[in-house]
Image (cartoon, rainbow, N blue to C red):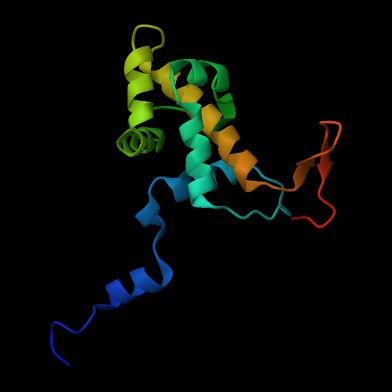
Length: 152
């Protein structure tokens, strides 16, 4: 077999199974968003749906202010410091989303501090990811949520 036709083991592994880092930071954000889920919770995730939900958070600066009104709970340990992943995620998300860049440019530092912007963004993102990932709750005809009897 010629050198051009041969694939390395790493190339074969990537094509067959993929790597979580291929979709950085999405895999990590989804995992973080689900870390306090019930132990018997089953979730499925569709990356384009999750990315669409994330994109809707920053359609414009008003959308951001409405959909991301609160900080993360203190138990999340939010920090942009090097000892936490949030800074890396923020940088990757800025590369991914032109609208996030625009909203951040519009709001920071005039209306929000950098740390406050990201704290609120990750709170909104966590909520949006959880809404996409955990589909056990459905909205009933009267607007209340009902458990899905099939668990789907």
